[in-house]
Length: 312
Image (tube, rainbow, N blue to C red; front, side, top):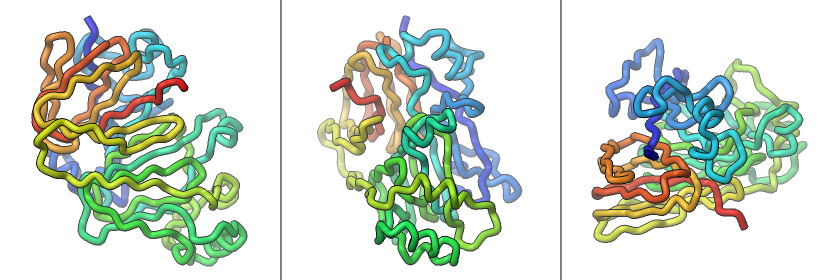
C-alpha cells in the first residue's frame, strides 16, 4: 500500500527568530533559544528530516530515498527532494546569494534556488531582492563601506505573495514575517552584507556567485472566500514548481509519476490516499510519494503544492 510520509519537523534556533510559528505550534522557544527555522522536508546531508510514523518510521528522508527510490521519486533519478521550511523572522536576515549549478558543482553541491510564500507579516513588511545596478564593482564597494542597502531593491509584501529567488540573485528575507520557503537541493549560502554586524561575511565567494542582472518574480495570491476549487501558479522555475491551491470542498490530483509536497497555509483539511484519511493540520507539510497515483484533499483550505516540472 502506498501512503503519504509525514516527516518530523526539525526546529533550528536563530538570533533573528520571531514567535509566530512557535506560538501556533506551542513549541518550546525561549529567549535563549528562539526558533527561527522549522524544516519540514529535507534530505540534504546533515539536515535530513526523521520520520517516526507510518511504514517508514525509524528512517530519515535520505535513507527512505536510498532504499525506496522508485517508490518515492518515480522517474526522477536524483537522490534529493525539494526542500520546504518555515522562516519566522523578528529581524531581517543577512543579505546573501546562492551559487548556480556550475559554481555549486565546484564545491560538490547543487544549485540553490528558492521561493517564499508569505503566510503572515506586519503591514509595511518588505524584503530585498535584486539590485538597482549591474555594476559589481560599485556593489562590492558599497558592501565594504557598509551601505549596500542603497543599491538593493526593496519589495513590499503582503500575506499570500509568492516571490521566486533564482540562484545568483542577491536577496534577504525581511523582518516581522512568517514565510514558507520552498527550494532546490543545494545548501550553500554566501553572506554579503549583514547590517554592520560582526558576523563573518563571504565577500569573495558571494560576489563570484552574484549575477546582478537577475531579477525576482512576484505573484500575488490574496486570501479570498473559497466558493470553488482553484489552482493558481505561484512559482515556475526550471527546477521546481509551486501551485497555490484554494480548495472549497474537494481537490483530486494525479501525481503524474512525480512526488508532491503539500503545505497547509490556511485552515485544516484531510488528505485521502487509497481510501485512507489522514488529518492535515494548518502549517503541516506532507510528502506524497510518486507511487501514489492519485490523492484527494478535502476541506475548505489553502495549500501550497510543490513538485518537479514535467519533462519537456
